[in-house]
Amino acid sequence: MEKNKILIVDDTPDNVKLLKTILKDIDCDIIVATDGEEALNKTFEEQPDLVLLDYMLPKLDGMKVLEKIKEWNKDIAVVIITAYGSERLAVETMRKGGEDYIINKPLRKKEVLDVVNRILDEINLKKESSLEKEENRNLQAYRILSRFERKLRDFFVKTLKQEYGENWWSIGIPKNIQTLCEERRNEAILRKKKVQPLLHYTDFSHYLSIILYKNDVDNWKSIYEKYFINIGWIKGRMIELNEIRNDITHPKPITEMQYEKLKLYTGEILEYMDRNV
Image 1 (cartoon, helix red, strand yellow):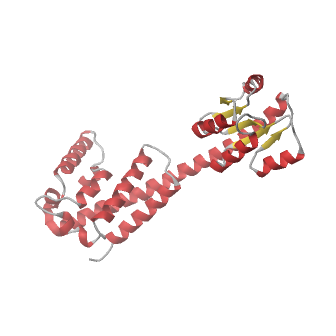
Image 2 (cartoon, helix red, strand yellow):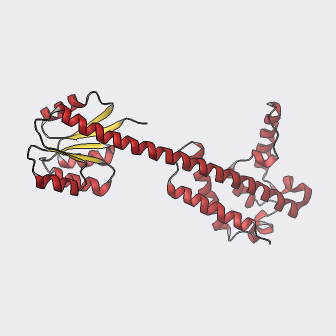
Image 3 (cartoon, helix red, strand yellow):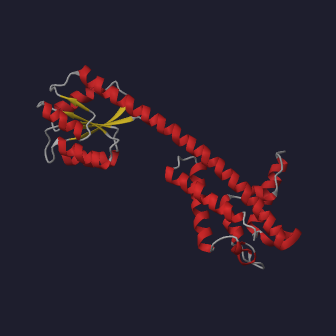
C-alpha cells in the first residue's frame, strides 16, 4: 500500500514546522500550502488522504476550503485547526464533513498524533477493504472472460467448419493469425507443454479480425452477419472487451462500471452465438 499523504495548510511557517516535527515519526508524505486557494490546488493535484487545515487563512478561510474539498471528494479527511474554538464552529465543521476538531494553538503533540493516527487507521482500513474488493472483482472478471474465450473459440470452429468444411483453418482464419498460432503451438511442443487446439494460441484482440475476415471469403457476410446485430455492434463490444481484458492482465484493478460492462457484453454475445440460425 502506498504511503499516506497529509496536506498541512497554514500561513504561519512556525506552525508548519511544528506540525512537521510532530508528524515526523508517522510514515507519510507531507505536502504544504500557505493559503486557501493553494490548499484547494494542492488537494486537487496531490489527492491527500488527510488535510490539516488552519481556520484563519488568506484568500479563502478554512471553512470555505473544507466545503469545497468535500464537494470535490468526500473521501478526503479534513481536520480544522484553530485557536478560536467554539461550539458553533465545532458543529459547523462536522456539518460540512470535517473528521475532527482541534481547538488548541499552540498544538499539543499527543492531541495531534491521537487524531491523525486514528483517522489514518480508518483510512487504511477502507483502502485495504477496497483493495480486497478490487482483487475479487478482477478474479471474477478473469473467470468470466476465460469462459467467454473458450465458448467463442468453439463457436468459431463450429461455424467455420459448417461453412468451409475441413479446410476451415486455411480458408477462414487470417494468415497472420494462422502463422502466430502455429508458431506458438510449435514452441509449446518444443517445451513439452500440453498441446492445445490451434485457436487456443491466438490473442483476444484477433477474435474480431476472424469475425470480419475478408479475402477470398467473407466471414461476416457468409457466417456472422446472421448471428450478430450489425458490424458496429460487434466491433464496439469486442473492442471494449479487449480494453478491459488488457487492464485485467496487466494487472490493473478494473472499475465497477468495467465489470458490469464485461458481464453485459459477454452475456449478450453469448446469447447471440447460441441462436439457432
